[in-house]
Image (cartoon, rainbow, N blue to C red; front, top):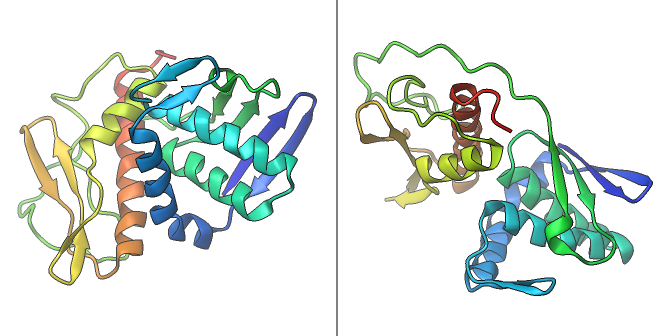
Length: 215
């Protein structure tokens, strides 16, 4: 996946390989754990950084990696941003070290899909090679959200992957029924994370669709 890094009048295109994205889950989780206790964002201490602030912090680390020509660390920082911000296209990096001034550009999200007809057997196991079905995007879905709010809501609606015996799965919240729907059992953590990211992206796009025109 591609992420453009804009530093003053220069633009760098970072091509993050799929295997780096797939294998960066532990690294991204460690970054989140480091930020869970709060972070000094320039002159302000932020006790609980939200999603946007976390990506701004990581963007600052990306800037440092680019300045030091540390390609490996730069790829991992770019992977975090790509995984956490669906449809992100570019990050504009503040060279003065003002973390809160790091900003993101997004591609236009495609129109929300029509609400799907509920399956007769929602507990049926889908092939592991296909994304787990996201609940219908109609009744009960929060509306009027801007992009950052939609990301935060999608993060609440789609759980992290978790282990079930020797397999893995995640859950997606169905606002219409007020229930959690579990994914099929998935053989590996990496595949589960890939499918979870697909479900996150679909939920984010659905939320943007219900709140079209907000941000």
